[in-house]
Image 1 (cartoon, rainbow, N blue to C red):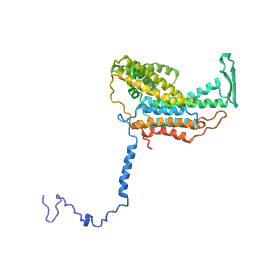
Image 2 (image 1 turned 90 degrees about the vertical axis):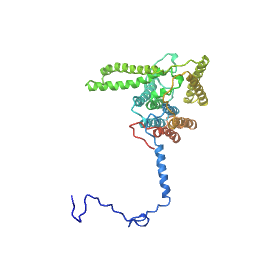
Image 3 (image 1 turned 30 degrees about the vertical axis):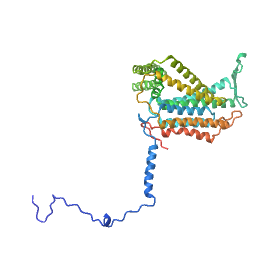
Amino acid sequence: MTTPAGAPDRATPAPPAIEARGPGGRAPGEGAARPSAPGEGNALPRRAAALRAAHAARAPLADRGNSLHAGAWWLWALGLATAASRTTNPLLLGLLVGVAGYVVAARRTDAPWARSYGAFVKLGLFVVAVRVVFSVALGSPVPGTHVLFTLPEVPLPGWADGVRIGGRVTGEQMLFALYDGAKLAALLICLGAANSLANPARLLKSLPGALYEAGVAVVVAMTFAPNMVADVLRLRTARRLRGRPTGDVRALAQIGLPVLEGALERSVAVAASMDARGYGRTAQVPPAVRRTTTALTLGGLLGVCGGTYGLLSAEGAGYAVPLLAAGLLAAAGGLWLGGRRSVRSRYRPDRWGVRSWLVAGSGLAVAVLMICAAAVDPEALMPGVVPPTAPSLPLWPALSVLVGLIPAFVAPVPAGTKETTP
């Protein structure tokens, strides 16, 4: 196809326009580059470094490689429980329960054991109610002048001096029962937080080698309740889909036996698979090593029990810490010697990283600070009952309890959970 003379050829693209540039490579009419403000050139790198540091400090998404050690959660919860045992102030106890609940809400997974926190809260409320009922029915040694009501008193023989059934009920007696029940409830709820956050299978995997022999029985005990919860949900869903009732007594009787049988079978199957893989097998060691291991382990556990009792009681503050430290050292030595009998290798052991140290250290810090506060100002942590006084919120103990919120910001975020940033 030919084109007329003088007409432009449409098949050939036009050459690109060449932009004219002035001196310095700038286009005509283009202004000079804006000079940077004083210090602006150094501010941008500093800002980028700050953003990188903030992103590095932010809790990562949890996976198999960076998940928190199960023992760190238990140390954190035991620290909160120790702090709860040192006070009867309902405001501090409520603050401890709130700290535990916030951490559970921020770092709880969707696993079956993670649903146990609500059950522990209900159990704590039940403990408070039982403590009050026992105080009303059986009386209390707390004297009081504000009589609320009087129950018929049952006469008892002479050998039951100091025990009574019925009689007068005072306001001081009820207040003491409420404070005491609230302390027990806070202890249970703090331990329930550890049950909701720590993976029982990974906790069992981290046991010392000396405890491998009891590991199979522990597996059956620790997996029975989660399997039972899962079976209950499965059977109730199946009955609901078939149009059958799920909440009456007859339905519970029909569901109960299959649930117990299925949960026990699954737990035994897990234990059998562990035994087939060599879990709990031991090697031969000299008799002297076995006797030394037994003596150190039993003596250490007795020392730990005695030291813990001293910490929980008001009179044992002098001997509790040395006895607890000696018991821990003896028990650690016994477990180390007992671990020599283990012939089982450990695949991909859980690492105790910086975040695990922060979580465990926050719980221990709460316990230590609360013990110090109880020694310095016991009246603020133990409100008066005779005569009744309104509890107040002491500043430094309240701030020490807030240290327990550190796991909500440093622990890895479970999958599907919105991250909480400081």
